[in-house]
Length: 364
Ligand SMILES: *Cc1c(COP(=O)(O)O)cnc(C)c1O
Image 1 (cartoon, helix red, strand yellow):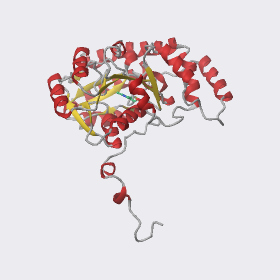
Image 2 (image 1 turned 90 degrees about the vertical axis):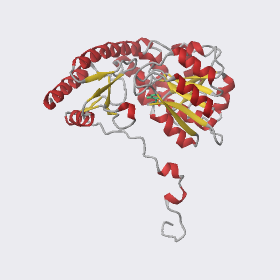
Image 3 (image 1 turned 30 degrees about the vertical axis):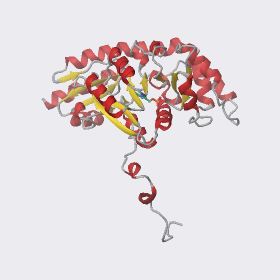
Image 4 (image 1 turned 30 degrees about the horizontal axis):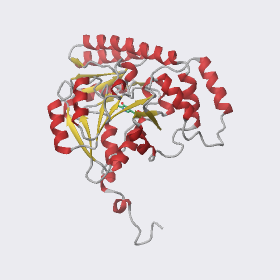
């Protein structure tokens, strides 16, 4: 086939914008202290793991899972205090939810808008789904530039705006009143992505009733179940019934449904872990701020963004010492010399701080 004279090569038939993409990069982390991906560093207690083992052993894996995941949704409604009049759509991670929304809105000429820097998947998925992307720069302190947002909304009339609350990779919460202004000024949808909600003590869930064009996303990934891949979209059913049409059948597997339900029956476990992570976040902030030549940005998430001279070299030196964080230098002008570290266990955080201290001392 491949040798036939008139067969196509990939660059002849794959969409040019896909050829131009580089795949989402996941760094190999075997044997390293992994502080790059906002994972919860704690595993589940032994009793719960035994319970999960039993559920897995008995799961009818020869059958398709419950397509509507009704029982899981009921558990989620209670665990996340979802308003009873709002609908819920489940995704294979919230990445899939973003993709469903983008596909639904991608009429010719439609615009998907976000801020920059923001979660990179907003832009990437816009490209996948063939919807035009517009990114509006944040202020240099990573707050919303409301005037620029309102002007861009006026100019582009976006079909949908994505805002992460708290924002990734910066860690801050945007001003809730400014978000309300944006929701009111937008003719289309505003999707507030609350992936880090459990670390933030703030939510716009209570605003859903006030705004007919507001949808909310949550995920179980950052709270400690990243391996299960479960994300949620919450909002009025007039929107979600349309999005449901794009959800692939059985997108949430049986293991995810069973294990998520089992874990959510003990909400105290993940909440205690989140509390421990927040305590460590304060400790990390204190330790990083004490180092000379570092600018630490306030975080309401389970990671901290900081600016440091020679960020590329510092990142590499940490890697050589077996510590993997995220290098954001070069990804956006506002992130010049910025690195992002996920909050790990107290021991991992100490190893990170000690290594960073030594690297700074050596280069001083
Ligand atoms: C990590 C992250 C997600 C992706 O979450 P999954 O549910 O694991 O796909 C979505 N939004 C933001 C802002 C994130 O940081």
